[in-house]
Length: 314
Image 1: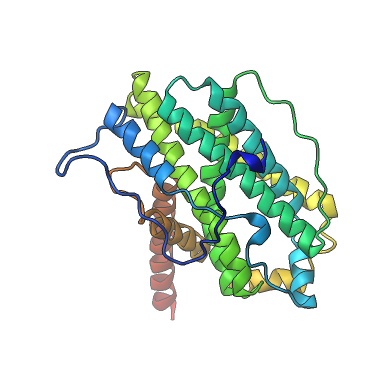
Image 2 (image 1 turned 90 degrees about the horizontal axis):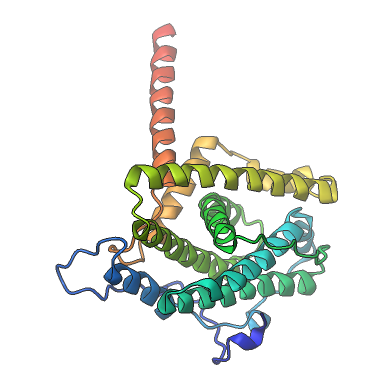
């Protein structure tokens, strides 16, 4: 896979307003998951909301020495770069195996976008002198669809947590706003990928006759696998620099005033905000937002009870 796969003119769409996916169903028509209309909707909206840009010509800002030090000290860039390259390889390998031509076209576009994500990280690494080397990719498994599904659920988990972390980093002014504008391009595309994947899975499972209970249990199982992979990635990121460069003062920019409840709220709210631009007929992730909502309800109840106990003892 190479840049030549996307031969259309490059653009730099950094405007805050993103394209909204519009339904292609007749007014008043309910889209039933797994149907031809559903497949047409989720594939067409994905294809039509593709944005054109070239990672090399994005408006990369000049950073101060302090900003450069903070960017270079983040211990996970090598893992992020490797993950994006592997994602591109998985989607690229799985695409030719798809029998449906419209789904195959959408998958091919996702593969190009995943490659572009890897290219964006590579450009950033080179431009700002980040210590991250290109590691050999692991051999892909024989079951490419299983690899794609594993990757898709991992992307859902990464993005949901990333929404909250991205908001925290932005509000802490860890890097200048222009840098976050570039990262937001990637975040928006990741959100599109998630919506496409969730709808692809619904279409796939309906084609196989799986009911809601079996689909939910399957999602839980795959999210568990994704969580274990994410934990492994964090550990590898910590081991790669032994945590020496990520100074306490830099970590404090994130952690000052940090609370678990606030982080979960940020993930939940940012997920809802980013998903709100998509056609309401499209399916969206429900399990992780539902778990976050349940956790927040429990935390609020705990806070109320703790507050009542404090007042009673006063």
